[in-house]
Image (cartoon, rainbow, N blue to C red):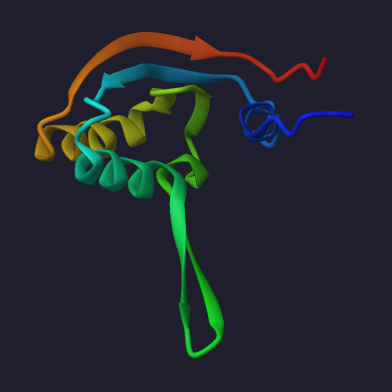
Length: 108
């Protein structure tokens, strides 16, 4: 029986174009549920229901130039870098930025 692996599935959905940009990682105190929720909604998006209709609000990871690398780690192109850092600064979230490039996706 296979276990659903959301992280692997999310990574496989990315296009295989090589990109240059930054790896951004952050740290949030898990006891701050409000801050964790804001960050989760921003990064992964959310859905709402109004009058029986579901509306999907895409997250930052679904934008072009963003790749999910793992828990609290994203790769972003130069175009997306400022957008993500502004959000993290606005919420006072400590983060680290590293210059990086990523190559094509190889499914194993």
